[in-house]
Every structure is written in C-alpha cells, then in structure tokens.
Image 1 (cartoon, rainbow, N blue to C red):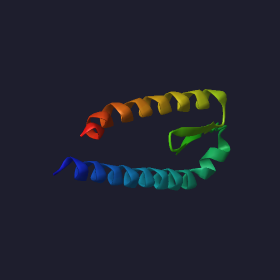
Image 2: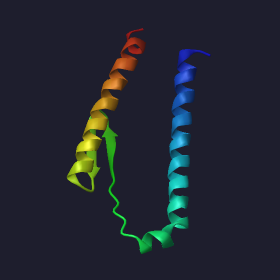
Image 3: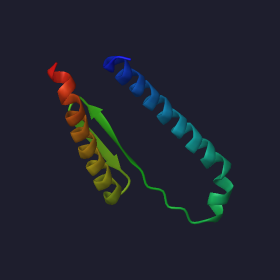
Amino acid sequence: MQLENWVIFTGIALIFVGFMLVFLGSLYHILTQQKDSERNVKFEGGGVVMIGPFPIIFGTSPGVTILIIGLTILLMLLYFLLLSPILKH
C-alpha cells in the first residue's frame, strides 16, 4: 500500500471512529439519563475549530480551555513533525 493511500485510509477510518464514539456516547447518555438526574453530575466540554492555520478554541470553563489549548499545540506540532518529510518530496 502506498503512503498516500495509507494516509487517506487512516484519515477516513479516524473520522468514522469519531462519529461512532459520538453516537455511542449520545446513546449511553440517553440510556442513563434517569440515573444522572438522581446524582449531582458536573459536565464540562470544549473544542477546536481550525480555519486554515487559525484555531478557534472554546470551552465551558478556564481549565477545559487551557487543556484544549495544550492539546491543540501538541497536535499542531505532531502534524508538522510527521508531515514535514512528506511535504519535502
């Protein structure tokens, strides 16, 4: 399998896995919703939207936002480290 085909396959597989995780998490939340109402549950979340080289980062609390910033920097470094040999050819 050529490198380009492997990268495309890996990207599609990761997108599919992401959709499945979101679906299963939503299903789990729906099935356990009655139990959550009996407990005191705290939910925090955040995300990143990349528009070109500019990340738009959001979160429900400062702690989550700082965590997302760190993960974004790590992923951008991995992107440049892993793709710099491929882009030179």
